[in-house]
Image (cartoon, rainbow, N blue to C red; front, side, top):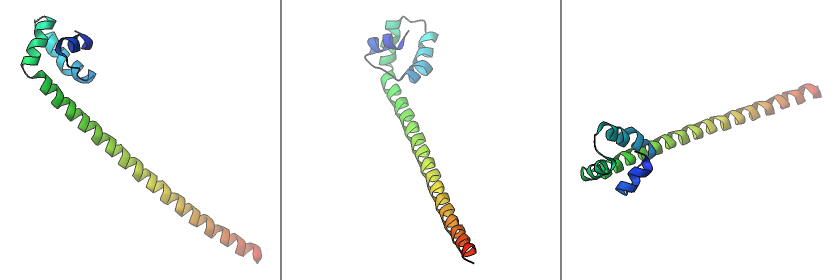
Length: 103
């Protein structure tokens, strides 16, 4: 059964990942027709289970995005600090060159 067929029969569209990892294997293990499987799936709380799993997945993705954002900011801060050190050293080097040239 395809995701589109499942969605048409249940009126619910899970994520592709959830469909492939959970729903489709359940369907393939059953001996029910597509219509029967979809009715049973809904009757047994499939929609709520799918919503719960999709919420967990969304939270994990938000967590990952937050960690990437924090890592990016830490890297940016370290780079900014490196540029400040480089500029201070360049300023001191220029001052030393001026002193040497004026002697």
